[in-house]
Image (cartoon, rainbow, N blue to C red; front, side, top):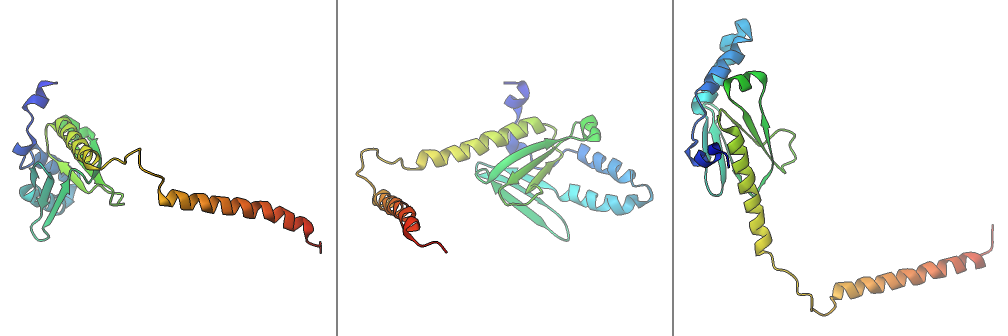
Length: 179
């Protein structure tokens, strides 16, 4: 295991790294005269952004006027994407996008401002697989020595009836007068 994985503890992550604020400054500065309009929402998002990683899942909250809170259990996570644009790579940042089976095209949660994004992604994958493995362990397995199931007997009756119908149909077609 690389040393970063040994020292990585996701439960210590509560806020994004300070470099995310500088990333927001640079992104807003690229808009030129619209800097104040684009920077203020990003600034408030940075100031209110909170993360919590526990044994059951991941929690993320942000916002002042419109507070948003998202909690995803590890069992609901379907896929995890790690993205870095050129500026994020230069600053050592990444965005970890967590997707569920909600049917939405956008990720359910985007974790920004984490310096050890690779280790976080690996942690989420481990927890996700562990949560799904618990389901497989708790499900009962069918006994191979059970007598024939009633549903299987009914399906065989239906199959036999359909075979009889299919055999009778060509004979009826031969005997019918042509028009």
